[in-house]
Image 1: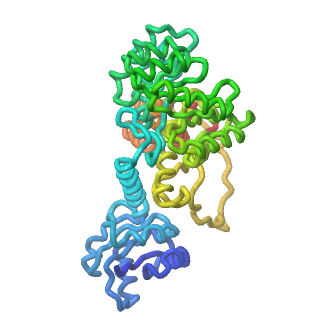
Image 2: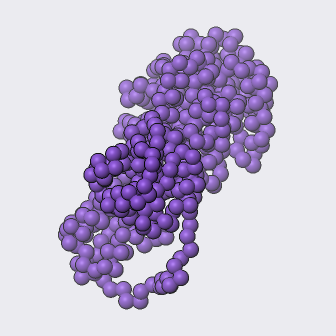
Image 3: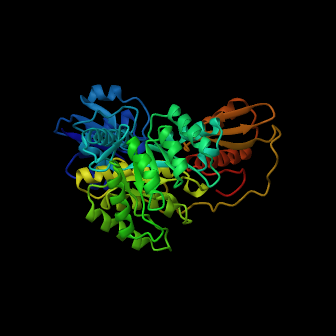
Length: 493
């Protein structure tokens, strides 16, 4: 396919470098590429006296205007390229297998295309994967993707509505397995009620989280798919119940956390007739022998490669004051190498909110990495949230730039004040609504632009400085929703 990339004078060198041998470059008589018009494109094409016949002309992704007439005159398709010149190297290889758009910049279009291709590959691989065991239809271990288990802390004491909301939220965020946490005060009848209710609320496997034999008995009889956990303190009593029901079990070491006690407990579980066993060598927090515990995982996996492993990621993320995204991704990478079948998080503290979604995406990335035998980069999926994969080119300020300074003449808008707040989406933990309240109307929307446009239409803003202020605050509110952060008007974000 013969491709011509149109640009302006300022971006010429960047475009030529990014396009390389994949496309020819046409420089229009204009400095800023985004201001290319159909007439300027036609004029530049005719003046260049190009001998080649092109199949496709890419104009910058930020241009506006209808290029359909120019397409007829020049005898080839004209489509939007990427917004930024440095993305041409990523976009051009897709030109012969993707129909670029007249309205959507190619970089945005291909993000969705690459993501869909990646997810389709994961789905196909999962369907074909041989697993060591299954919980309902969920494959655990083997070549299957690592599954995310979300613990609902204190689930047994929750009322029906609260439990339903929590389960629905965890499933919406990507949890594959729901773990129902018990406390020291949990009564047997609460376990039976909670497990029975949970099974009516979701088709996902249900786990009961306790060492208490009586509570395990009630959970198993109510239909729990997995018991978390068994060790030497309860295996002779609870293990018999689990074996008889054919329920799966997570087996842990004794209080010493030794590899030897874990192996003994697994052998005891086998002897009792438990067929579905998942091993948890116990991941210790940072500052409490995390390296030693990872070595324990590695040694266990080397000795028992056919036994899927349970990785308690929350033991690290809940006990470290850092953003959970990178920590969860790194622990997923370790999980692949030590045979993890289940990634566990309670998503309990505020700082660990979003861990289910992060672990789900990291697990998919590690699956793709394994399929492609590559590092987990350039996959079509990522966990980049704050930092950029590629920085845009920077330019110095104009020589005649005026130094900005705050105004000393702030006055209240005669049209009245507007209160801004956010209502997060509690189910998905991502997104929500911006609320702008005025005495004459309350406006809600998902982004700053639509809220601001509506406020202007309603004519409840009468000063330019007030409009500028509201634009800043609305953008902060949108960012707060995007990053699942709290928002307070006038506070620094």
